[in-house]
Length: 245
Length: 245
DNA sequence: GCGGGTTATTGACCCGTATCAATTTGTGCA
DNA sequence: TGCACAAATTGATACGGGTCAATAACCCGC
Image (cartoon, rainbow over all chains, first blue to last red):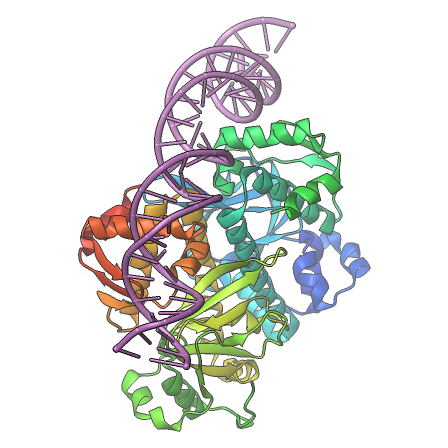
């Protein structure tokens, strides 16, 4: 869970190494590191880690010692309800960070589990804190990322409080595609590793309802979808669905 | 909106003054300031501010220059949807902070509006940042508060994704009472300034449904409620309602 | 490539909550 | 003190999505 090879003092060079290894655009780009420099340093990276489907990055109760960057694959985060059911609260895609709450609490509050064969990069909180000290932009950027997560959660509130089943599914697909686009991945045609069951759970619906929403979108020729393969045929129609309440 | 009377350098004494004036338990207590010391300094405080019902602490788009502490009264935070509807995303009670996103973004993302005659204390972000520099515990505590907001949002996700109308209302009342208890306010009998309409909006329900939920709770002798007056008659029954399902 | 088990889809029916409409209860202001 | 408007409540009905049950598609290991 922790690789104790971090140098006593981290300087910009070390930061670059971490960034390049983790596709850490989210943290590094806004801190003003240039892309080529990062790419050039790709081999120096430590702390990369393969992770298998169903394997957990961490469980609720674990010490929160790292923030993670998704390099490849995808993850779901969920809480355990008192009755043993799970509630999925987020999905993490390549180029994104997860486990940010580690910056603020000793113990993990949620579970985060790989949805497919994935690869992550662990950033020890201690190192990050030392970095923030030297490069204030890093600390500010982490704050900003937490704030963005909060704003995301408000959008989800909106979705869960107001939107029809069809709109929820349409929004999920749309946002998923947007997020892929943002990190330079294919966004018209891609895999969604999350199961219908998990998706339903996340969106506050039943599997059957999600299934019917997919069929509706297929019937309307907005998407094609079979299991995890998904293609957006008509982005405008998809957006239209979302705007209209 | 901003009172420019902060000294160049803030030391512990200044912090105490800010805290005492704002009932800033959330920020100050975990930073290790003792309660009596704070109370004794109550008169020194600047930056307090009365605010009328319907008046806004800030609007989306405003520069985010302060974090606020509720000293008296209550507030609702909401987003504006594209269609002009609002989505209430949170309620703020005495002793709590709001507008924490100011620590991370230039512009406000949400609106925050007084639900009743209230009094707040504004904490300029600049001052807070200077403070964090001198007293690291403050910075950490702010991080922690943001993380807690995130965790709250996960609980709301759970509620919106799974719970029946009755359970949602019961949970709202229960949590509201808990929060009052935490800051030493009456929690068996109190006012909820939020209207049924706003409550419905927040909980993802219709007004009529909220009304019926209240009637149900009244019929079961769990609470008494008329408009904003609320009394919890049977806390155990209320908790039971929440646990089941 | 063939089972066996899991995941997704489809259909029929039902229930909880939305919606529409009508009162009732408050509340703030003259 | 009472009037007028807003907020809350209550009732009747409709509908979206939940639930239950059966089938189909897919995937994985052998």
